Image (tube, rainbow, N blue to C red; front, side, top):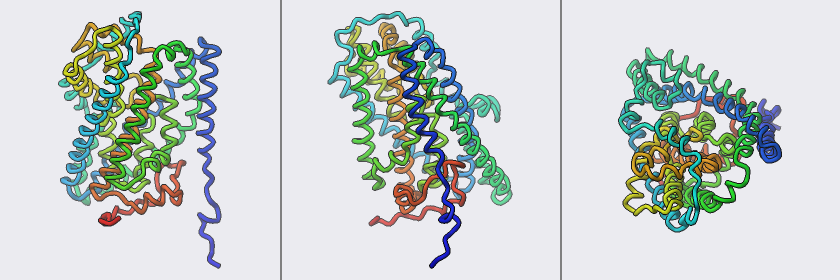
Length: 448
């Protein structure tokens, strides 16, 4: 009889399952408080804001460590460039698909027809629109003021630039850079351990966030805007399971349901915080655990959070058509395409931020059709609920993109993914990292 291994004799208990059960209970309690005691619910908003801010605090160091380790461990810089170019081309193509689907559904549903909008929130919308930035400002904003300001200001794209430069510099140092790489590996483990500790505050954050939004909006706004909400949610579902599911199966032979089930806890976290950025660190860790190589994960995931905005594209499309139709100023097809392409460009970098979609919508209308900006005030009441579907769709799109690009670059361990999906290689929720370094991905056989 074989001697049982230490792992077999003393399996680890996954205590985090109780954490996510607590998140579900907290969401239900938040809804009840928001409905029964609206004023008390609104006063709990800082709990949700505080939790999301704790998560955002960890974004920059995690992205930096992941990218530097990924690039620094690759022998040829050309390989990194190939991954980046492939990712950007894929993001553009998929955003175009999302834009087209949103246009088709919006023109079929005609959301907003027959409504008389109340422009009471116009001043608030104009403040958000004035804060929008143009393409030039966006591009210049990628460059940080100092080498460390990207970390102190929490700018994802600035952190990405600094990490790329540091990774390529370590690549040039060769063996002399290996001690630095080992040090960054230890820092990464520390950062992920801190993140795992922060996650235990998720039930408190979810309770406060849900109670605040339900207390502020109630059910009146939801009833009056039911058509656009249901249309938007259904469009996102069609895009995720129809378009992304088909592309994932054809490009990597991975089932979309298996991938989404594997990321179930991340979807619950996004649903409770309405921000896909809250799950970004866990997506990085889980994609590496799934069998995608570090360089592919390190480049695709952070870049996708700024450039792969499938859910945002659908939202901007349908919200624009809703506002124009509701004010009896429908847009011609040419106007729709021009305005929405501008919005897609203006929204880069805002995918993970709760509420950023409404600012992009307002700034786009302000620049192209200022007479329509007044109508944005009416959609503010349900923007939070729509931002959840927006964030979930963006997150699913980035997960699919990471697996696809890993497969195309021959940097995806298919056998490892089968083990993970089957539950034979469980994800370590305590450290968010594998105890042993992942083996380099082997080329996928043509008949696999």
